Length: 157
Image (cartoon, rainbow, N blue to C red; front, top):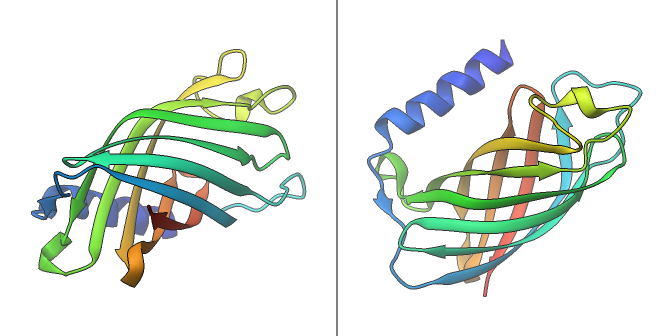
């Protein structure tokens, strides 16, 4: 049920975004996530956290993150492609982002936990919805496929 709701929400945002593409000035951003929620928790799951950096220019985003995956393995996500849209549905401070890149780090015995994994490398798409706060801070909810949600805090530099 929750997955269906999340998929529907994401589709609705993509279909009706109508928001302005983020500004023309380059923005560098530090990001961190203290927590990820698993839709189907398992005794194998470990605490997930993430740190990263992102650049946004004319609505295009690029970034890199380092994280501990759900199985305690050192991992990374490099995303050379992505987009950011502000004021979604005309709501000031509400934004939508998406990124496409490569995950690294899901290795034996967990290599089959993510699709298309080959020697620890796998393609990834991460949509997110967030809220801009005062002083260059923002909060963001990253949708991790059918596996879970990652709660993120970012600071523009």
